[in-house]
Length: 194
Image 1 (cartoon, rainbow, N blue to C red):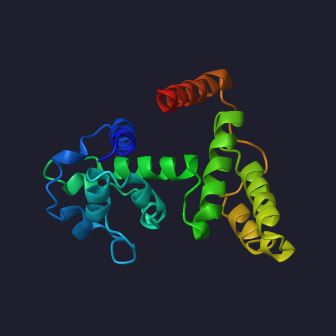
Image 2: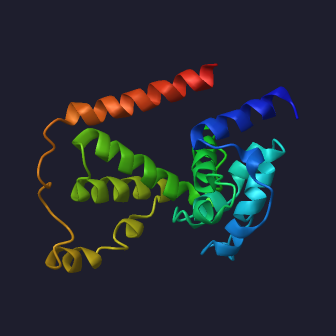
């Protein structure tokens, strides 16, 4: 394993707060995964790729974006490997290295917008999130009809009190939320510079 590969494995372990070499490939994680049948690479194999230093190959897998973060894999692991955390770390690496599977670009855009929304407001502002997401989708697709694809859901969600035009109760100290985000970003930046 090269020095770069070793560093990537160490990054994954640090982000996931786990030791991937504790996994002895029993397969319980993949057997219990509700999405395992549609994944191109199951959780067991993702862990094996990380163990062997093939972190970038694992991060390119569609599986990291198909995972629903239900934590079944981590719960079933007899060695307490945080498999879900490893998959989250692989997602983060795939975004940072811009190697995520193309068909999941919208998922990446949504996650970034969701986090930006929370950072800005201290909580989700659903209307702002929907508008921003649709505008981002419109910009990436260049298809005006794509922005209207879910328009029929708006009234249904509103009448079921699932969509609010006014933000919920204001967060008392938005600065605390911003500081949390700033600290996380500063930590990650210092880790990648090492």
